[in-house]
Image 1 (cartoon, helix red, strand yellow):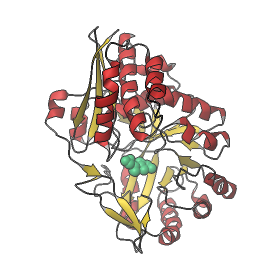
Image 2 (spheres, rainbow, N blue to C red; image 1 turned 45 degrees about the vertical axis):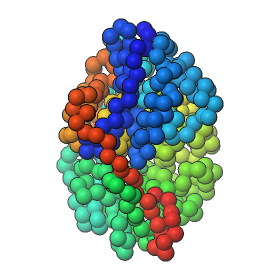
Image 3 (cartoon, helix red, strand yellow; image 1 turned 45 degrees about the horizontal axis):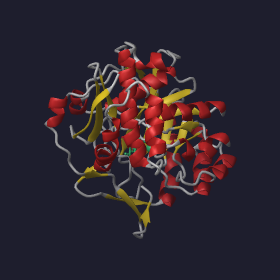
Image 4 (cartoon, rainbow, N blue to C red; image 1 turned 90 degrees about the vertical axis):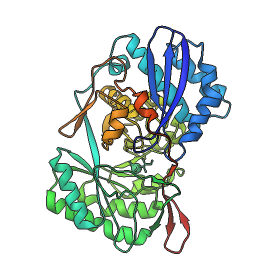
Length: 402
Ligand code: GCO
Ligand code: MG
């Protein structure tokens, strides 16, 4: 099955997405997501200028060899741009292989380990009352697991807060927005927030929280400890992930489960975290870490150490990534949870898919392949628009982590 064409499609149905489409001499094609929020065109160029010319004429069924060819062959390994580009190709090739086998992707991975995939959505509000209401909205929608983020009293803007809680979008157009941060104000407020939520809704729902790389290890340890009475499902990105050994200190101080990994792009970024059992959930995701081929390795390593998956699934990951994730989650033995923020109707029209949401879970589709396509005519109507993730400063103006 020879690759005859490989193209990049950049479209902005409400937000930017980069898609790889690979066609074969047997009439089968596959699509993969290669979206890197705020840096989309660098991946498009990496693919167009450096990778796709090497794909033409290769056998589409040799996924592993093609993966190794690009990973080892680049000499400059890893990194978010290269690994996202490789993920786009990898997803498209798995799509083709599953279509050729006339099977849904989860069958090729090893078949169903479960009938449905538990997901969590983002409830957020400007302050405590709005956030408590937003949690109620998610409960009404049937979610059993809810990530809770709130504006912090005394800070003008905080990450993770959107105008419409059901359609979270962190990027802004033109130039980056600037947020303000104070770990002191945040750490004082956050236990109060979770106390109110448990008080209002009880302990039947899973609650999650994302500290978004903003704490030092000892601050994270304090937050983990303070939140223990509220039984979080996880505390995410408590510490910047470059410092893998920073999680040791955090771990020694709290039984709050720890998740990390959405910004990782290879197994080497989480090897120590997993093998030293410093985390409970690995969030590394298909689109930013080299595709299904590489995620299988990460999940297998994690499984040895009782670390479960909890893939990133914000709206800047296209429905193609979500589709692949639902197949992966349906199969992977050490599944934990899947993040799921609903895409807008505009995005869903460009990327028709067969996964569906039902009572707090995503249900995998049965179509051959990963079950997500791109409507190229519609995609062409939405040209790329420059957009950035925000940046973040401390109150005195010091540049900080976003
Ligand atoms: C999450 C994330 C997102 C990211 C965003 C970056 O847990 O869903 O932290 O909010 O910041 O996906 O592009
Ligand atoms: Mg996060």
